[in-house]
Structures are given as structure tokens and as C-alpha cells.
Image (tube, rainbow, N blue to C red; front, side):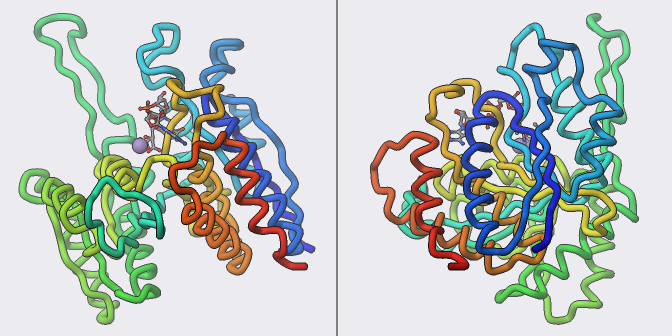
Length: 353
Ligand code: NAD
Ligand code: IPM
Ligand code: MN
């Protein structure tokens, strides 16, 4: 049996609630996969910051880095909480992990599962995956503010796009597209306005496309992409896009799939130099925290991505199947976070036995 060391960061709000269910599922499926998961929990996030002032120490980062993977719930306080400076947790913890661990591929799959009610009347057969760049763009923190608080204030966040950074994520997206049935890759950008970065992305996509003649490539401006997400989401297969566009598009994708509580993600370091990090797309949801109202499905599907990452394809499929069955049987029932987790675990029980 193989052992995977897992850093668990439950985080804030609904984070610990959904992580509890994700771990239930992981532990249950690990038995059948002949896998041992050795977990270390790190108490990080807004709550820890309020208690101790710590965001992510060098010691904690170094310790987290020694693990094979990370499972994160959600971090961040209630928007507008005056005790927490804006972005301190998001930038200092979540983005610091993604950047320090060079998780340059942010994988965000979207499906409309059978039986799930999409807010779209006719969503069609939706099954696409957004490959969001994870370490560049306007997220890098390259910017600043001049004359703050005056009427002459200037506030800047510069979007950084390197040939190295764009090419590696574009290559990943082509590899992924080539393995899928439809082999269709859509670049989403805003090349009509962001002409410098847009040109770099377009030229790299064109150059790499020559190596993947089996992949059909097309392009959409990000504003037009939001139209098609709503009017014809089944047209998409693999989407490759920059960090900020990918952030916005994947909340929209989650919404059309039937809710943010269903959207999973993997922050992948494909070279395996550093641990990859699996987390639901959603945040700490302060509005429903502590009430067992959160849907743990996104966190559980993130466990499936983790299993897939380590080559446990069958175990991942078993988790996906259990979630699919649970969603199909859900109807209008109102269940607690742990009831949903238990129901999904119950559907796994025969795996490996
Ligand atoms: P959010 O995703 O936390 O919540 C948006 C809405 O979706 C809320 O109404 C919430 O109740 C609902 N929701 C979210 N997850 C749900 C689930 N599993 N089941 C049912 N409903 C769910 O976004 P927000 O309100 O913009 O952010 C809250 C905090 O989380 C902020 O501090 C933000 O920075 C942080 N955040 C963290 C992450 C992360 O840790 N990866 C991601 C996004 C936001
Ligand atoms: C997400 C979140 C993060 C992001 C924030 C909390 C930094 O919205 O994971 O989608 O913008 O990437
Ligand atoms: Mn987001």
C-alpha cells in the first residue's frame, strides 16, 4: 500500500464543514484503493489571523511543502470585516500557496450532472474544463498606489504575462484537449483591447497548435464567452485563459452547472516539484457558515481530482459515480452538510471489497 501525505487546511466559515465530508469520502475510498492518507492539519485562515496575527509563516509554508498534496476548504473572512485588511488572507495565504508551490494550472471542470437543475432552461450536454493560468496575470501583486486618499489617487495592478508562463499552461491545455473526445480548445482573452498580453497568448496558442493537428482551436473574447456560457455552454470542451478571466468564468460556470457548491478545482504543479492543492471553487460563505447548510459536493469532487492526480483513476471514478448518483437522487430534499457526505460515502461502500 502506498502512503500519500496530505496537508489539510480546513480554513474559515464553511471550509471546515465541507473538508470534514471530503475527508470522510477520501478515507472511505482509500481503503479500497489500497492507499494510506497521512494527514496533517494546518489551522490557517482569517480565524487564525484574528487570534495570532499569523497569515502563513515561512515555517508553515515549508512544512506544508513537504506533503504530497494539499486539501483546502476555504479561507477568508466576511467581506467588509474591518478587523481583516482587504486581501491579507487571500493574497498572503491562498495565492501565496499557489505561487510558492508553482501551481500554474488551475483546473476547473464543469458538468451539468443528470438530474441537477441548472438555472438555464436548456443547458444541453455541458461537460467542459477551464484551464485557468494560476501564477501570473493581474494576480501577481505587481502594482501600487500613488497619492492614496487624494483626489489625484492612481491605483494600479499590472498584469504579468511571460512567454514561459503562458506556454507551459497552453501546452497543458493542448495535452488535455488531445485526450478528450471532442479535442476542442478555446482560448479566451480580450485581444481586442489587451493587445500586448492578448498577442502573446494568441501567438503561443498558434505555435503550439501546430504540434497538435488533432486539436481544433478557436478563440473568443471574454465578454462574448460569457454570452455563450449562458446561451450555449455545451459548445465548450477545454478553455484556456488567464488568471482573472478564469476566476470570473468559473464562478459563472459553477452557477450554470447548478450551483457553486458543486464546483471542484485542482491547483496543479504538473512537474510535481511541489504539492498540488485541491479545493472547492467557492469561498468561506460567511452567510451560511456553522449551520450545516453548505453543500460539500465541491470539496468531495476535489478529492476525486486529487485521486486522479495520483493515478488512482478507478477510485476517482468511484467518487464521481457516487456523487453523480447522489445528485440524481437528490430532488428537492434539504439535507445537512454531513447528511450529504454520509449519503455519498454510503454509495462507495462496496469499492474494493
Ligand atoms: P463565497 O463563494 O464564499 O459565497 C458566495 C455565495 O455562494 C454565498 O451566498 C454562499 O452562501 C454561497 N456558497 C458558497 N459555497 C457554498 C456551498 N458549498 N454550498 C452552498 N452555498 C455556497 O464567495 P464570497 O462571499 O465572495 O467570499 C467569502 C469569503 O471567501 C471572502 O473572504 C473571499 O475572499 C473568500 N474566498 C475564498 C476562496 C478560497 O478559499 N478558495 C474562494 C472564494 C472566496
Ligand atoms: C478562487 C478565489 C480566489 C481567486 C481568491 C479568494 C484569491 O476567488 O479560488 O476562485 O481569485 O483565485
Ligand atoms: Mn473565484
